[in-house]
Amino acid sequence: MTPPTESEKIGVFGGTFDPIHNGHLAIAEFVRLKLSLDKVIFVVASDQWLRKHPPEALSADRFKMVELAIKSRPYFLASDVDIVRQGHTYTIDTLRDLRVQLGDSVASETDHRCRCSQFIS
Image 1 (cartoon, rainbow, N blue to C red):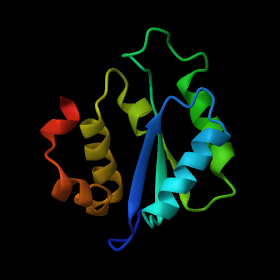
Image 2 (cartoon, rainbow, N blue to C red):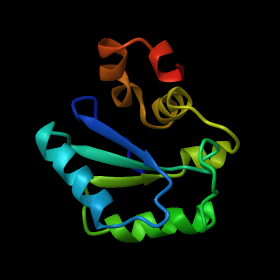
Image 3 (cartoon, rainbow, N blue to C red):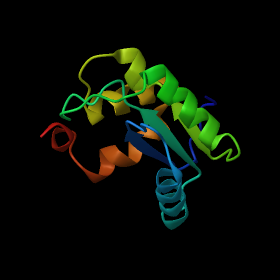
Image 4 (cartoon, rainbow, N blue to C red):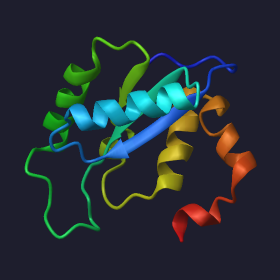
């Protein structure tokens, strides 16, 4: 994944994507246009430990499905940050890891608009 520039506006769309479908793509496109985002990062969940039923497809396969679904849209990116981390994950973990990988621009707006403790509660 190419690091965004500091001036780019980035959205983060996390989910199981089991499988990814046109609804996911339509939502991401709508939000991208509505908020004037330069890029949207699809973060594929390792597991959904808060759900009763685990995903049917393996996380690596779901990640590949996302990559295939977004390949014609250069403003959509796929991230396996939650898969690599493994185990239970919270939004704040994802944002911290994305910030390490891609730089401060990923979560800088989040820092200004809400308190991090809200992500964990």
